Image (tube, one colour):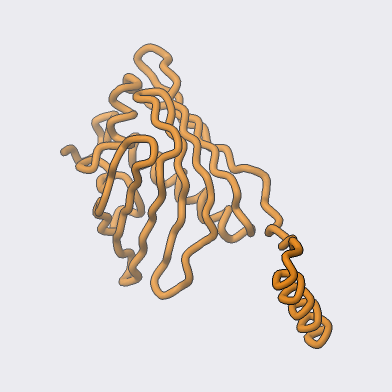
Length: 176
């Protein structure tokens, strides 16, 4: 109850004042999301579509969303930020690159902020670009989702983005 919660908070404050450690419970994380897609294009072409600031707005988000790349520093320790609007609601996605192996693998953090909502908890995305000759398999893992709504949003979002990316790189969509 609220009174007991306040007491625990007070105990935590006293513990911190006396130099004792206090553990804070981490949110329960869901199992990682896995999305695998094959593209009829060489690995270098798929990697470029995923990382080129001119191409990202052509596949990121819904067709009627206006996405712009605000920042993209493709190196370990670098970061990215995309902003846009869909049906009048603004969004921002940002993160930092933890691993960059061109054209094989990307690992980056992911935080999103929709309209006037608070930013999401930071999650982690790993993307592997597997060379299969004239085709490329992209294996994406999005982990550290804290609730089903966030996970469903990521699953739907990545599948939508990959559908749009396929049209772009397989020559069925707008080009740069």
